[in-house]
Each structure stands twice: as structure tokens, then as C-alpha cells.
Image (cartoon, rainbow, N blue to C red; front, side):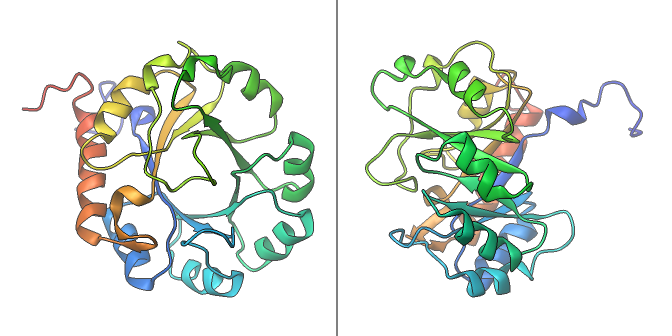
Length: 234
């Protein structure tokens, strides 16, 4: 099958971010499994927190075309810029209550993602289209479940409550694991301009400690969903 084959829909490939990396062996496993991006958490209250110097050392293990993502929660712009200076080429992620103006000021022109924290109960009450319009300079909107604290709790929200169309690149997060990520992809494919998925607790043996086996299982489930969008595994 040639690259020019019109039956090959390369735009449909679901990209994958593994978040909350703290160890060299987990970074290496994620890369070997084919992850597109790896996330490092700079929220001190998180069990997955890593200092900037540690994250920079881990990020240096990444090959070309695997993107480091720096996750912040309600940071000061100077903190973001000082951390980002240590990790060239990183994408930023704002996972708290940051305004659009703070995201833009803190990013200093770098591309950034903004997390939408969607209620687990009555998810339909969250106006995602309005939220997207409030962050016009975001490179993507990450859909996570609203929980106590900020992410990484392993809880999902009701995917069926989202609107039919959202004018943004979307990243599905919150409670994903190898057993349900395919369902999430099938539920949201075509909702936005593109779809990616983001996993942390769903590939862990304990908080901040990843399982290489679960990472590979997660990646396999994503690829299966892309190959069989109707769930017809043959």
C-alpha cells in the first residue's frame, strides 16, 4: 500500500500523550511504545511532580518528533518561562483556572493546551463551545473530569454529553485505560478538528510509577480503535 493510496486516512490517527512521567525507564517505555508526547507535572501538590531540572534531564532522553509537555496549575508567568527555558521545544499545558490572558502571557508565544474540567455529574451543563471560544490562541483543548485537585485521579466524565461539533483540536483525558480508550476514541472521533488521548493513572502501578506493559497495552488499544472505528475487531 503506497503513501499516496487514497484509502489511507492519515489524519485519522489518534495521537497519544503519556502524562506524569517521573522515571527514565518509563520515559523509555513510552517512547518505545510509540507515544507522540510525554507530560511532566510542575504542580507541587501532585504525587507526579518533578522539579524542572529533573524534567529537563528526562526530556533529554526524547528523540526527535516526540514532544515534551509541561503541565502547570495556576502558575505565575515567570515560573512557566523559567521552566520552559530549560526544556526547549516543549508544549505547555495549563490545567487550572488560568484565564486566556494569563495563558498567553505565561506562554510567551509558545504553543499551549488548556484543560477544560468537565463535571462528572451533569456533564451537559458545561458549555464546551463557549469554553473553546474563551481560549482562541490555545493549540488544543484537553477534556478532563472535574475532580478535587487537578487531574490524575482516574475518573471519567460522560462523553455522550458533549456537543456534536467543537471547533478545536481535542485531547480526551480523565479515567482512560487500555480497556476503555477505544470506546472513548469511537465516541469522540470527528467531534473536533482532530482527536488525541492523554493517559496517566491508567498506565500506572502506583502514582507516578508507570507500567511498561500497560503503556504498550494502551497504545495497542488506541491503534485498534483507529483501525476498527466501528469496533469490528477481525
